[in-house]
Image 1: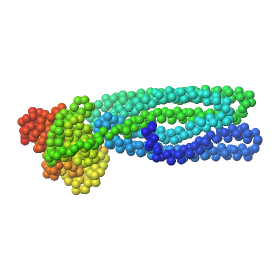
Image 2: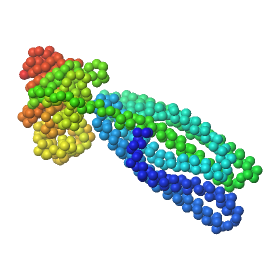
Image 3: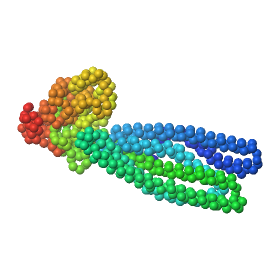
Length: 570
């Protein structure tokens, strides 16, 4: 919990006000049994009705003050917990947004989602509880013991004798409980991942009639989470019955010792009644401490997980590297990279592009096509070699500047719940003419003009109310609209028919001729007229040149071309 303290500091003055009200309310609660004892032992024997009414009114006023104080304190504690968690979630979301792709792979998206939701909720709960029960319970516990000490020291020491046993139970259970909650949160990560996979792949699951299989898979994951939570809850749950046992033993001892003292005339019945009331207060305070302890254990595990993300170092820092004088716009010079740091996913890749040229990349699934794009955009750091844009190493270009150079359509890109205009503009405040030009070049105007609201048509999350081809055209328009100097199209025309694909390539040549373009494609027709074509197999370059050159020199490329187009159509 230590890293979370910094988020609480701005709200310490507000917390101070809440603690004051909680303190006043709790003290008023402690006064009620004492007043009752005084009435029974000293006021009633005087048979003075006015005094009875006076002290009775004080009891009522104390109860009202306790009620009002606790309500005000609880409202303040809730607001502090809300605001603290809001700031924490904001910073966590911001940090996640700037994590490198390698770091996201390390944490995993389901785990990051759980940390942003479940873990931050646990923090919210413990912050509110610490201000409510965390203040009230110790005051009731210490105050109750202090007042009973003035009423009847012998009985108080009898009651206190069981507290060391309770402290021992709490210490022993905490050593086992906190690691169990960390393990539980890892189980929640797995469950979140399973749910995401099932929701994302629901169409495939239904199409292949695998609903029952996935239900069983989810049941197994769910049972594992239940098992972990049960194990943690049972371990932490030992504290309640053990505390009840020790406190009830203490209560029994108090009653026995109290009976002997009353019989010996060393104490009065009213004192015993008040003492039993205080004992009940102390018992409830101890149970509250147990609740705090359980919640703190869970929140402590969550705080560690959140802090792990917040404290993640920036692993793609800008490096000082000298610029190179060269006419090429993009240069890959003997570049290798491995996702796991063991076997290279791409090895010794080299190519050069002048400004305005087009590079087509083709190869089997898993050949490393998208990896080259990730390295160019520095979403991952290359293992060796050099990648330069305009003579500058991508490692020396600040991320904000580097990413503005690209207009990108990724392989599995998404649309957001916004209008078509909003999805194309994407918060860049682009003029209408620029948006319409991009949509026209992307061949999207064909279906946009047919919509009643045209550019104001609302797109659902992930574009589920558009066809595959329509989604790809909106995504293409988004990439084109920024007038970036480098255009990257990662299998962005797979859902387009051949005619639309041909019209798109023609529009790109005419409208964006000065843009350096990299096209990753499964179709030879999409890269047929590219200035350069790179053929990959298992992360290695097996062919590089124009279509005509590759048809003569690269057997793999020729086979792909002939299987798709029936021969050389160059």
